[in-house]
Length: 364
Ligand SMILES: Cc1ncc(COP(=O)(O)O)c(C=O)c1O
Image 1 (cartoon, rainbow, N blue to C red):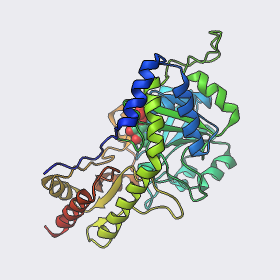
Image 2 (image 1 turned 30 degrees about the vertical axis):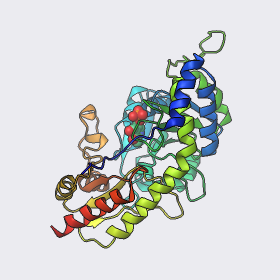
Image 3 (image 1 turned 180 degrees about the vertical axis):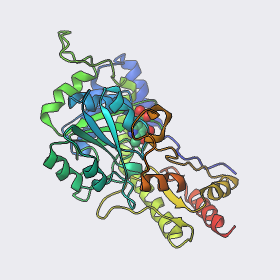
């Protein structure tokens, strides 16, 4: 029996042809594919411009540079996230201030944000965790306090807010990752910075190109962070498939919801009212996560735990003043969370197998 993996990148003839055509064109960097990918994906998200780059981590670094954030500034970040959300802040010399997440939706919590706000707070990096959109009220809160809103949309391609705005079109700058396991991938490493602000758009393009212009004049600190043309060409084809893939993820999540809602010892993820979840991950909270994972493993189903060591407790932040701080919600979720496969390539038979295995874990 074949194992069911957590993710399976999509690769088809059209993507292969797009990659080969791009190589054959000898236009390997700084060409039409990157421009088209940035413009098509930002249009899809309802933003003004997208700038492809080498990874989601680089996009986050770039977002902070664009907004002029550096030493002496504080940036609020959830601790329940991938480490890149926090380290980008440290890499620009600013201070990451960790906050707790919402008990029901697991995104950054407004009450915790307000408690952590100081005159030095320049931005919040709001993570649409696992594909769940952050609270729309965050936009007003940021505007009210003149705090920049950076979306970490690395896991949220195609998610939409209750106002119908897609991830990427909500904040000042949004950052996507195209790592192979993500909802949209580019055949290698990749990311994108996106903005709905005209005043940031031109600088965003320059930033991934040493902050320079066509005459080789550098106007601000940047680097070579550009995405290759082959990756952009693959990403463009994947973008055409995205809505169909999301529909499949949503259908699988719905089946899981129906099958698991009434099981004792487990709780299912709740979707924020009126929003469209992108289901990058489907995560259960289990009373006995070790047992659940053992049963899944025996049934040939992969699973993952996220984020067992929240960012502020990671060794990289051993000297951070919040290293020992207790975040009740984050700490609780970190100990109980088990992600199960929800990717769009799963067959109905595979979905059945996952359901049976999770149900069996409750009865065994
Ligand atoms: C929430 C979040 N932020 C940032 C990143 C960083 O993206 P990348 O791996 O492309 O650098 C990831 C990737 O896993 C992520 O999940």
